[in-house]
Image (cartoon, rainbow, N blue to C red; front, side, top):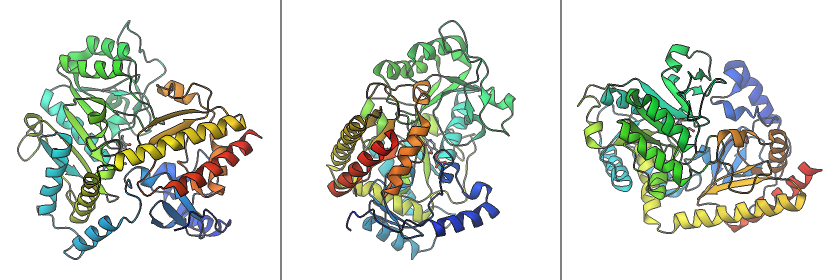
Length: 446
Ligand code: PLP
């Protein structure tokens, strides 16, 4: 299809749907970021998606840089995925009993990631929540460690951020972290210790102080949820040292798994976690999550072991079919990650040039097909922590986002998110995107 971002400028149908939605659903959406709260304006209600494009209910077409927040690495409505799901559909939608596709997807995931065993869930949240329960069951310890600004889904113990009294220096232990959501009892949040990403000294100090009580350290191997943050080699080393204290290292690859390489971010960065969590791409756009790791740990999961975990729709045949088709297509195309990387590298360079020409300071973090352009003047690639990311000009980002949307480019509607490039993005989409970016930066500067 022609890379035309043109379309009706009316948002009347989205507005009408949003009003109806607000009457029957909190905030009118089923996941908060979709409400456009941090950028303003009317969330677009999407009618359909094909390739690199979304079409909204008013008929406007957008180049999509969200890709359903990561799963759509092949682009929307990919023929292999569509055919696999249609074929599965003709055989029934859910069995509540084991089936061959679950075995095939587990074999594929374990082979590609070098994992012994996996268990499928229906979301990334269930995967991380279950991996933590497993880590606690396996180690017999209570506490977990997470990093400020990392997101692992919405299980109670993971909705915890650094409180103002939190210590991250080498002098002492961390204080109790505060829940970042109402409804999470402080007593429960107190079992989650929070420290800074990319701060090896703080992690070492925490492990020295509390290591014997810590069941697991969970982390995003490349952060997508504070905007893109790439771990430094020193930090990667410190992550490995947590094993010395008998804590399990849990890589949350829900976003990065099969996104940054066939073996995820851990493969790319040489990380060796004890457990990993997946989601998004392994479901090919249908609801799937998974956790897995070494056999001796995974054998603690029921019915083999004492750690309970289950799911009515786990291993759903349609979801397994979509995941299998997606992973098989990725594996069959030896250049796909190089092409995604090349497109996104040119996107990063083009954004830098456009912003520079308009006099708008931006700092681009990019790895593979994940990218965040922070509206701030730090050198490109240098934003490494939640605190640095938080120093961005969110109003400037919002103005730029609206400028892009008006020109048919659907960027992630928050400064603190990664965008995701798909294999369906071509030179045509790149040039339309960069033209739009140039105009939007100029307008945002003006
Ligand atoms: N972990 C990471 C790194 C994520 O990015 C997300 C979702 O964005 C999750 C976990 C939660 O996954 P889900 O939204 O499928 O529950």
